[in-house]
Amino acid sequence: MNHIMEPATSIVQIKGIRDGLLASFMDAPWEEQRSALLVQIDERSSFFQGARLAIDIGPQVLKVNDLVDLRDQLSERNVMLWAVVSESPTSEQTAQLLGLATRISKPRPEESRHVLDTISNENALFINKTIRSGTRIEYPGNIVVIGDVNPGAEIIAGGSVVVWGRVRGLIHAGSKGDRSAFICALDLSANQLRIAEEASAMLKPQKDPKPEIASINKEGRLQAEIWQTGETIIRN
Amino acid sequence: MTAQVITVTSGKGGVGKTTAVANLATALAMDGKKVVCIDGDIGLRNLDVVMGLENRIVYDIVDVIEGRCKLKQAMIRDKHHPELYLIPAAQTRDKNAVSPSDMIRVCKDLRPDSDFIIVDSPAGIERGFRNAIAPADRVLVVTNPEVSAVRDADRVVGILEAEEKGNPALIINRLNPALVKNNDMLSAEDVLDLLGIKLIGIVPEDENVIIGSNRGAPAVTDGKSRAGQAFRNISKRLQGEDVPFMNLTPQSGLWNAIQRITGRK
Image 1: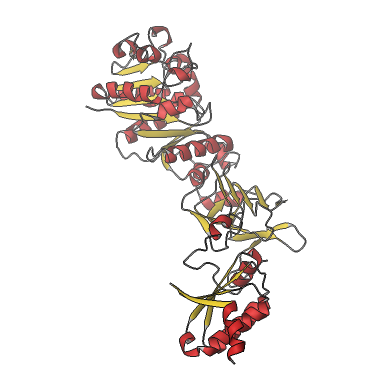
Image 2: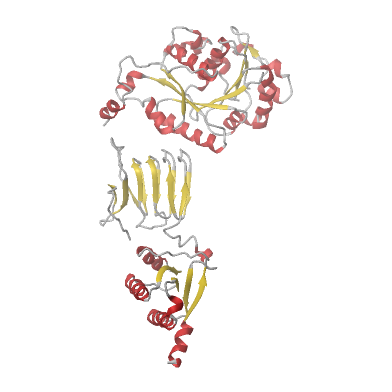
């Protein structure tokens, strides 16, 4: 047994962090990394009982199925996978789709360098006031406004924009080309909305405003629809 | 006695800042207050004309700032109200002749001997506007019920918020109730809805204002003028009195939001 264990343990390193355990891997195919991790857990199952585990998968791109399989195999061993740390935005998004965190308390040193390129969907600029005419707010990630966006104001976000109030100014979501970005507001009466390169037609002020969400539909056009509570909208 | 400095501004030009200053200052003086108006529109002065004091100007505010005269020498006493004074702007200079700290200093010198100092801001958001708001204890934003004027007012309110000048109060000037009724003009509610600041008065459209301006006799001196009444009410509110808003609509239901909304396409 021992001669098999040796290479397996060197592929995966486990260390304690504030929020549980962090597994990081040597450069190897995902299958090898995964089995090494499981072997490690099986070996010391009492140590891993009930543990919260985060994994650092480096730059590799994992599919939803990869993560689902791992999560299930871990939970069979009574280990909870709660976070996936990756340099790949695709893997981060996949992890987020599964409800996994993509940030752990101790930031990776190289992360700060990429922070503008890989803004996580969990991060947003929070603005707790009405944005008045002549104000331009630009942010590479998501923007949340608690207040109105008045005519003549501009909100430019690399990610999505949420306005808890009335929109009458200009909003550009996905300004760096992210076509999955969306804009939602309690009253979306803007005379122009933009998502990535798409611009909206005129949106008339409504008599009875309802919360709306604007996104790029399957035909590739920007469209706004009434927000339906209870419907989970997953966009990618 | 220490005066309150009130700056009247708007962003957009031509909405009635100068008219509002002349009327409010006169109304305050009619209530026995000692009032000094300062024309902040260096290079495009006209508060003196509206107040009918043009031909009495000897020194102006730039002369005061540059030390060519004493403050008292530049204060022109009103023809009808002995407790009302005007410090005119220079017509031959530009806004850069005055700095925000100059304005603060002039107002500081005036404060002990007056009740109200009313500063007329130029249009725009540049140097002249900065000068005018620098000494302000309180700012009144004048707008018309027009989309362009409201948007500029919004910009000004944003700047005032950023400069932490306290909460500005809004004067909606030249409202025409008949046009509002036909949905051809923004209503006071529409304007307030957008700007989200406190209203201090609505002044109806009134030709007496123009007649008064040309004669150098502000509308507040005309007991029959509706606009004059509205300005008198605002001056009471500036003095801390709780005056109900005028009913500008003999036909009830105009302010009724349901009617307004159903009438609008």
